Length: 338
Ligand code: HEM
Ligand code: HEM
Image (tube, rainbow, N blue to C red):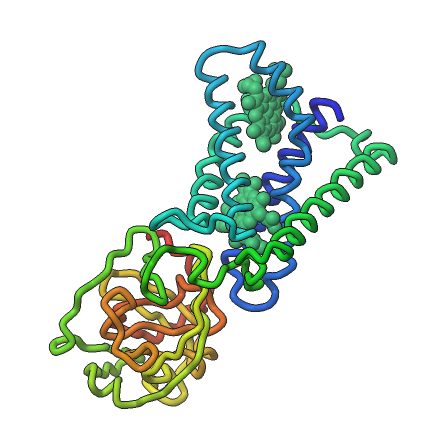
């Protein structure tokens, strides 16, 4: 494959990997599976294309010196780190190092590579599509690359199963059983979204404020804890692990007035918030207990949201306010920004 087609193919698979990776993080129910297969193919195609790219790289390195050259090398290091951490996670061979999971390294490296990808593409160019890229021969060659990538994906999956590595027990989201991921003695690790911090809240003055239109009702910890609604749910963290547990508390729809409309905003003492469809209120839980015991501070004491079928970043901790709002639930960034 020539240099231009190699670069073009890399551009396509990297953009595809970033897009499907982002989608995979939104997946909480079954539709995530095909997205993750597509992601695996896009990511592994980088390795399949590597022999051709190495020719381009050698020529480029021989021609250049200075900062641009090192920026290209840094870009290469980040992409290879993302692929290596992706494989370490997917196989479960090295799912975490101390407090950091392979998935966190994976996404961190991939996000850091984005500006360098934009720069490398703009500065080096050499990937302009041509009409002949759709010729029979070119398409056959592209098909061979896709086929080779498919075989590589099957080989990774097969080796993971044969060796009995934890990756064989991944969910359809790609997450591993919790014990395989982090060296944390607790059954469920404590992780926060970006800059969120664990809160130590005193339950005596704490109130859950529920606002629906002109009416506001404040609930105490004991009142909520007394409901005793129970749900078994899988907490599936975008850090790459999942844990099934029993949560107790009160179903969210019980705290709302009848005939409510709009969406439900669940807000934390930290300012973190998520907006959810009102139609889900019957399956959402404001939990005060985990496996029969009051929540720990790290898990959201006095009360946290349990959102079955949604990834961990929806499970707002240290909840202090619930508000009905006329805006539709999707009017928010797909992922929290802080
Ligand atoms: C430079 C961009 C990226 C590359 C090259 C890449 C590559 C890979 C590779 C090679 C794997 C292992 C796949 C397998 O063997 O089945 C993987 C897994 C994964 N990646 Fe990425 N990735 C990228 C970006 C992202 C981003 C931005 C996210 C999320 C925001 C993400 C989320 C995941 C997840 C959840 C898995 C686990 C899939 C599974 O175990 O089935 N990736 N990635
Ligand atoms: C996995 C993704 C990629 C990696 C790791 C990578 C890495 C590199 C490296 C290390 C070099 C040699 C140093 C230099 O010339 O600056 C290089 C050269 C080059 N790359 Fe990439 N690159 C990637 C994708 C792309 C893409 C998507 C394009 C096109 C849009 C591209 C176009 C070029 C060109 C034109 C050269 C210069 C070749 C020459 O001067 O003979 N690369 N790349």
